Length: 62
Image 1 (cartoon, rainbow, N blue to C red):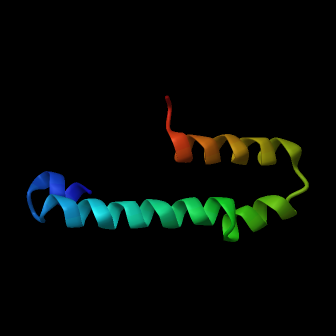
Image 2: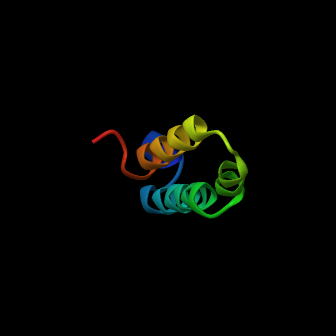
């Protein structure tokens, strides 16, 4: 995480905290509140955009 890169914290614990945060975000967009709101939306365009954003967050721009 940023604190490890900036030298304010040891690198490995900061990395672990960052990964836990990222995993929580992944959970929210695949199975949490954001996924539920998207599923209940009847708008096909917003559902397609949500799926695209979900993939960008998961695998990045590569």
